[in-house]
Amino acid sequence: GTARSLSRFYISAGDLESSFRWRARCVAQDIVGRGGVASFASYPSGHDFGMWGRIMLDNARDWLGAQQPVPALTPAADCPR
Image (cartoon, rainbow, N blue to C red):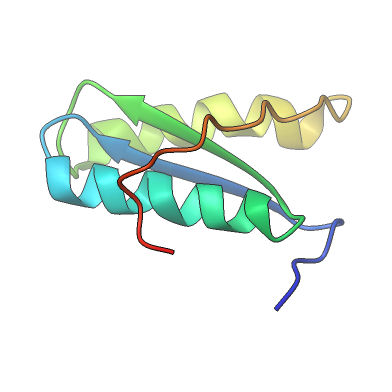
């Protein structure tokens, strides 16, 4: 279905988890394609506490500050439709 425009999705993955990173980016693109607001970030790490702490810090700036536009994702041809 369509996404709610008031919801913001922050999706991320580590560079060391390539298949999860690919799928996470595709999910973010699907949300944007359905009219939602989503961002995707890739970090030089695996799926670990260090990455999660950094993600929380980066995204908290957006949650607590003025609402800035979330950049649109570049469509990837390799994501399932």
